[in-house]
Amino acid sequence: MSKVNELYFPQAPDSPLDYALKKRNEPVIDTVTRAIERKHVLLAYQPIVHAKNPLKPAFYEGLIRIMDDTKEIIPAKDFITIVETLETGRIIDCLALELGLNTLAECPTLRLSINMSARSIGYPRWMETLEKGLSMDGTVAERLILEITEDSAMMMPELVKVFMTNLHKRGISFALDDFGAGYTAFRFLKQFHFDIVKIDGQFIRNINEDADNQVLTTALVAIANQFDMLSVAECVETQEEMSFLQDLGFDCLQGYLTGRPETVPAWRESETTLQQYL
Image 1: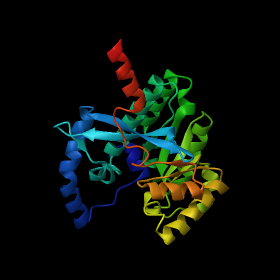
Image 2: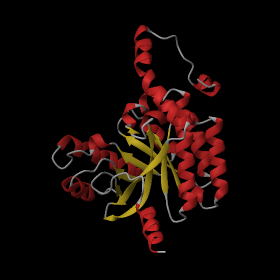
Image 3: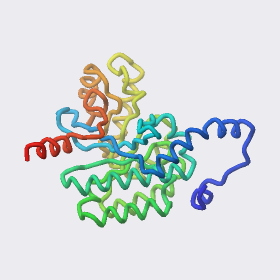
Image 4: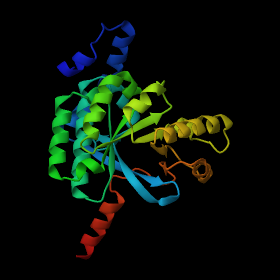
């Protein structure tokens, strides 16, 4: 673990259970570490569309993809939680940011969100990557959205607030990811000044039939509206869900119904097709 991580997250001695879990996770960590060293990483781009016009993307989310030794993509669920507290997680955040900034520089009309953990705040390489990317194009900052999960933000709210305030001044926007999944201290929302709130998929699935999800999601959308945040419904998979969410007043939708993550996004497909005719 780096000195930065030790500063923010001092480690207690391992319990027998912790030791057993570490041993079980070692093969995954080794595979991910090798992939990172070889830069076998890329972004998959998923559209976040306007609820009133689902064919029109509002922005895209760049999702990190890591490939194993055979160039097969390792499912994020197999490693994200394992590396979250390790320096490997910080390096993944840096690579995702670097790829996202390069994409923004290549496509001047694109708006893109990139995930990061609050644990990466203060990690020197992450900030160096950001500064380098912002220097490439004067419009990059206003087209960059940083997504921080609710659980991650609540882990160190004071640090996150200062971080967001400083980057807001430079034109960067912030999205609160997986809203409702954790134990949010709602009193922090106004102080954070998130620009976008993404409602966790557990409240969206079968919302057209689930009365509990309807009540909870209505409340979460009301909170987003109260704090003037753009509301995004995650994990939208059926037409029935989409119709209900549109009626509920969501600003944007994200999910397989409106667009799957693609490593070759629509704007690059157009460029490839054009080049074939030149």
